Amino acid sequence: MSEVIEFFNFTIQPKLKSTKEYFEATLYQLESKFTETTPFTDSFSIMIKKSFLITTYSILEQELSIFTKLIQMKSTSNIKIDDLKHRGIYRDYIYLTKVIGFKLESDINWRKIQVYNRIRNYFVHEPRNVLSQMEVKKLSNSKVPYIKFKKESNDKDRYVLTEIDSNLIIDFLTTIEMFLKELFIEAYKKEYFK
Image 1: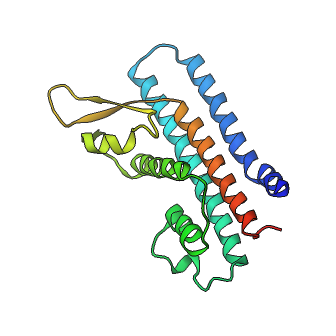
Image 2: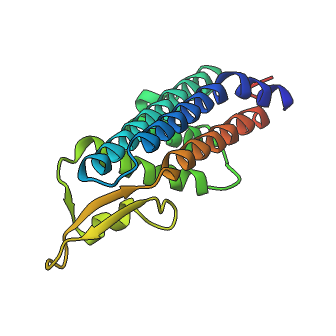
């Protein structure tokens, strides 16, 4: 099993680590240059953090897709990834867990990734700045509590994004690392890596 961990540490972990280091350096520069709170700095900070989350999500998509295709190539299953109706990370996860039979020790990382998926989709596809309370609960909850919304003055169900905590990116990178490492270990246990 140490070979699998070593392989993971040489292939995927450097990409996650360099993204984390780049984010921290960018954040440090941002905070040292913009010490006052103004609408511009707030929105610029949020924009940078959105960008890093989207980039980090792309890393997850790419690495999970490569991993799943590798498992498919070594699998004896007649069902192929493209046979599934789902797309993206959901298709890969369903292929690994339902078709191949991967059993992860915990589903906490996958559940967090699902929240990050909703956050990423909101950042990429949702042009609205105002959300309902139900939408806010899907994006900021106990699993991923790093996004802050503020209720608009007199309206009962209108919330606007006010802050993205830097820990959002760090937690997402850590979650991806733990999730992918779990998959590598499960592949080793099922003898896909010898």
